[in-house]
Image (tube, rainbow, N blue to C red):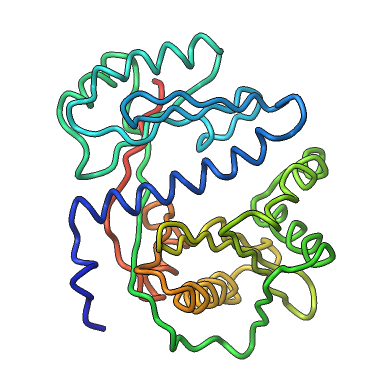
Length: 272
């Protein structure tokens, strides 16, 4: 496939893809924030488009991250670190390749952070002619009954403990009606086996939260969910599709097999 000129790597493209990933995370957090009394303690702090995300009572790394740092903004880091420490929250900083500079690294190191991980961001062109595998049924989730099955597969795929699963399912049921969201369920022999989300925002289709029940892994379900979302995103007339995964993980390799390619790496800085 010949790459479209609009997908030639550039800082503008990197920032568009990073922005849609952040928009999805914030959309998830806003849903939790609307629970009566905000029991999860969702909060945000923004300084010159650098955004601190916080979920005081939910130790999710993605929900307790700083995103959007760009060169020349190292002086914002200490203020944000102090904000998290005042609330007793462990934070992390995400720094995308192309938007780092030595001052950011030096300041994070001075404040006790180190680069502990690497996350890949991948892109590809839309493809309205993608062929779906016949042997795997992937269904859009459009009703409460299918939402129950979607959540069953999601919980199993992400390894959410049984003790927390009931409250988690209750908290995220609004995903079904969230603007720009499409939910998908894959089955094996009629049983819910894998789940995934397509988030369409600013003419980008973002493939989010693909997860397979461990009992059904190795059967091509993740790849089938990627293809179905590619087909539907292409029908929505997006400019590109994108996703993210831990570098060289199974998910990363599946995305490469689906025609996606690496755009940038996001370094994850966590406390020592």
